[in-house]
Length: 360
Image (cartoon, rainbow, N blue to C red; front, side, top):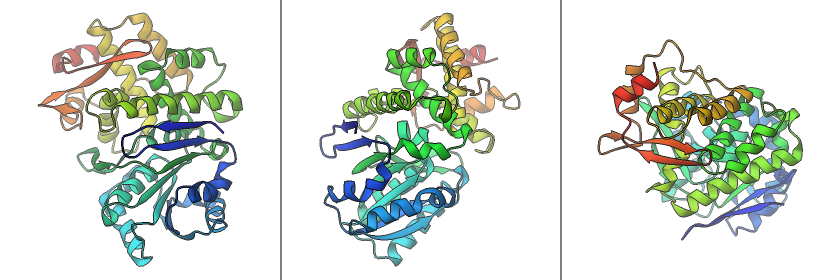
């Protein structure tokens, strides 16, 4: 079983990646020395697929389990849903030694983590991601939170899990649209950190659906992506500097999501659009070449992901939305822009005029 360590001063933890590991969740959690009460948070569709396996594994290893289901969709990622998790936690007397388990994608993971961070001022938290995007990105690093009507993830906390348990087998039930969304984040790691991963994706015959990717290559994708994020987070847990590079493609991506009311694109699709836009801005600023931008865009297209900002969105509206982004510092928007495949820079020199010129 490949195991990656996220090394942090106070809250180091393991990312375990193994086929069939959902059956072993109870044994894995026994090793953590946590209390016997576990609240599993999921959505109805994921729970229908994997709830019994998860619950049985926990109960067979002596855990007392409770369940809270949240409807699927970004529109439910709000404080009302968090309040409902609290209600279930209160009803079932979830204590400080208890554990909240997130069984689902990034939305479930973000909300469960935020609930764990704030219930009784902090209870144990375990991530069991069931989407590719959550496996390679959202489940690792301790960012938790919910959306505000005016912006994505504006309410949240840094709160690290005790364990990230990744079972690639669960991806067989993931819709292709969601699989491609996860590949967007994998491409992101190639651009910002791992040139070799980027090249491997270019060389692969197919990267747009689960069934076309060999298990060995999927394992490589998971391990390389999780290692990249672990490397970054270990150096900068709370985004004081380096960790901001993980937001590549997210500045404009988040604006696209918000302005389309989280209905037109899933997160990875919006990130893909944001990466293409960031590439154009980087070329305009002379930070990287048109040839490198073309390589990125070709790979994004190969993954079956969108490239263009929707025609109905106005650049002025995107710029206005960006102003409320978490990455604004001292009133200036910080963009993560590539300088070559495998490296990026953080800059606040991308003026509104330059962005308009780059994104006509």
